[in-house]
Amino acid sequence: MPGKGNGTVANSGGTLGEAIGALICALSLFAASAAAAQPPDDRLASELEPIITAEMKAEGVPGAAIGIVRGGKILLAKGFGVTSIETGVPVTADTLFRLGSTTKMFTAAALVQMALAGKLDFHRPIGEYVRGLDRAIARLTVDQLLSHTAGLRNDDPPSERAGEEALGKVVRAWKADQLIATPGEVFSYSNNGYWLAGYVAEAVDGKPYASVVEAELLRPLGMTRSTFRLDTASTYPLALGHRVSGGKTVVVRPIPDNPAGWPSGALFSTANDLCRWLLALTGEGRLEGKQALRKGLVEQLAAAHANVPSTHSQYGYGLSLAEYRGFKVWEHGGGRAGYGSFLRIFPAPQVGIVILTNGRGSQLPKTVERASELLLPLQPKARAAPPAIQEMTPAEMSDYVGVYNNGGESGVEIFVREGRLFLRAEKSEFPLSKIGERRLMMKLPDAAEPDELVMLPDRRGRIVYIQVGSGALKRIK
Image 1 (cartoon, rainbow, N blue to C red):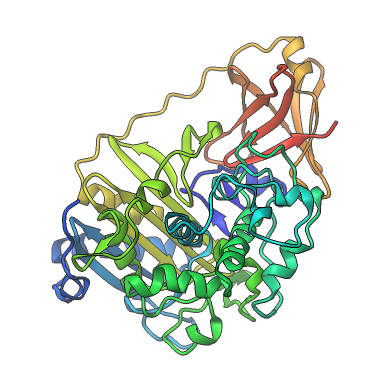
Image 2 (cartoon, helix red, strand yellow; image 1 turned 30 degrees about the horizontal axis):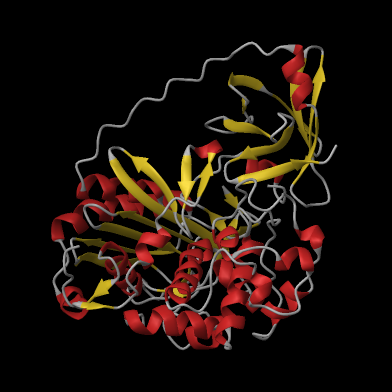
């Protein structure tokens, strides 16, 4: 799903999002301090070190950190590489990285905490809690915002500098044209939805969004270095984001810092802090023998609140939900301003893995995969048979013809030429093949795997949306 600007959810989404850019992370727990003090699992560390260092080199990642928990214990928390190619300062398990869209699980969790405390109802219109919103925006619900079913467009987070009042200013200025789909009708990943959700938390609690998350989550969990505020993050060892410019890896300057986008992807955190988060999530909210998070929080986050047909998965609140090689898995990834992150949880065996990098959105998938294999008896990888191409009738092709848009200035067009169906994105054209009922396949020239498109109808059977990865485009013509 391309979480535009902020990364991906569960590494899903395929390459179409890249192609069309703007259109389309109950065992009682040991005391965390005692767990952190235990020596790392030497076998696990020795197995993973060559893999993570090789993958960092292959992807041009200057620095990374990994955290692994299992059964209430921290097995590994370690840094690799450097915080900056200019200084050569080593990364440690206490080095801060910006998470990108993995932040969304914290925004969701803070709001669930508030709902469990009776401060708001996820299924009531947010206009009951927030003043000054456009009428169409005020009708949305927190449930829709956190499950990406509100129908809001997906924009890049604003990067210019601003004060913490910027969040409210941005969302109160929105009009009905922010909606690209009928609320509740389709899953479509939206950074904007999480900005608005963050502002709901701010309005209900009467304090800045960052302070809400700090009070609801960071302080109770002892995540002492984690922060949204760059002025605070810069007082600790901080990994700097990197990008490629002119064929060379360079430090991202300046560091983007606009609070209007914080709820979708701007938390700074460390491997050690995120191990505490993993311990709480895999322990039903318990940490250090106490109920650090409200009972029912994890259950709400990991409940299936939306289906994602194009990825054969579901979405909770800030978590992608799926089955993986015989185990239930919760995941989210992110990428923002030269950083990357990925978090994977296997809830039943209480296993959690977090990856942090300072290399242009890298999430080190080979390292995550190998760590998963070392920690669990995963089923063998199933060999995916190439999809069988099916014949498409002229009537079917005609049903799909149209222009579809996700709220940007341009859209994609599906058209028929010489008896063949094509998709046009800007100046590029790609043939489409049928692989199932209302399912199409498109192969980009440089892509390792094809993209799957799901054509979604309304109640009358007319095709209204294209869904690819976790993004949806609505038919406008």
